[in-house]
Image: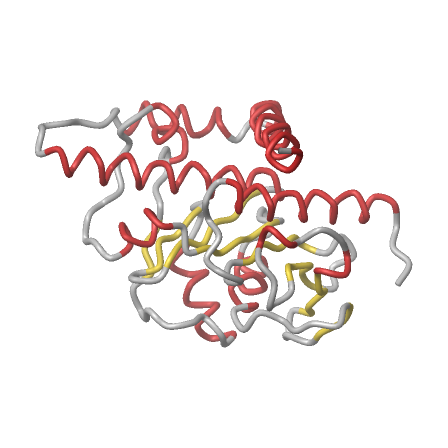
Length: 239
């Protein structure tokens, strides 16, 4: 398939983002997936099933899936949970990238009945709104109906904890979505650790968290933070 230079660049970023998530500890065997909205409106580009996040390198490792779940480009196979991606993007015009992982601390936190609160600076930035909860089922989101239910639970937020399952996250672009995944996992880890100490602790005010979260979504900060992880990936893969 012949693709434009701009789409090629976007797909290279998508591949790098998959490997950044792996580097940051969000790999669970060959599970977990990241997608981006097709610029021509045909559906979503995402990692294919059967390979790990670390293995995503090129177009050969991706598929283009229509909004109805038809395989348009690539040999497949497709992840069964493709409706996570399509239904969220259909419900959220502001979202251009969606991911789902079994991030360790987020998965554990999803099993609790606690409200995720900010312990440290990075947590406050991602939790300016909130991380939503989805508790209608703990099994795969493998139908358009369950995908729509997850999208409804996500609402206007950037992340949703799926009870006893994992984390779904999104963003205005691939870089932003990846950073949201990293920060939410870090926030869950910090909250679990603070709670385990038995010490009294507090979180920033809601007003302060909103201010920090709004600042974190600025293009320049996304670019700077992505640059940090992209450079880290280069060093990681060269080692």
